[in-house]
Length: 140
Image (cartoon, rainbow, N blue to C red; front, top):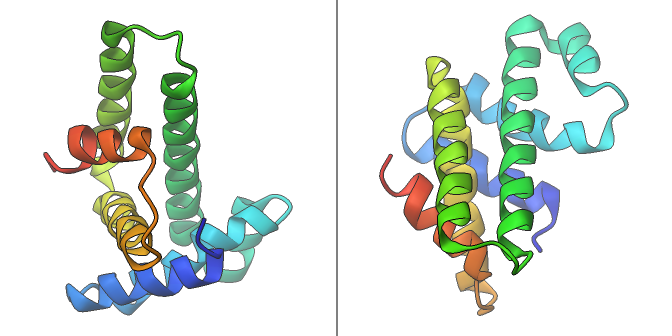
């Protein structure tokens, strides 16, 4: 898919466009930098403080849950009810993180950027991603 830096650039631009704080825009980069760091929460905490470390940690956990849910749904052996349950788990997890609205804003901006990337490169969006976008993110 999209290069991590380009994705973070797009997410930060979306966040800037809706008037979010510069700190949240910076967090867009820190979340994706976590993929390249050993002990990302610890590194981010030392460099930027506990607030950023918490944001990075929660956002990364949510991303991992979403990937696992999409992977399970793509397995092909899951029935419709099981897929619905998995989607509901992702939705509940997203809402659980809604205490920190920054996590929700980052995930919404990230999904919008992902969908924009698929449109820009004229590639079909994977069915699991499209379904998750409609069932989990669109209602928010």
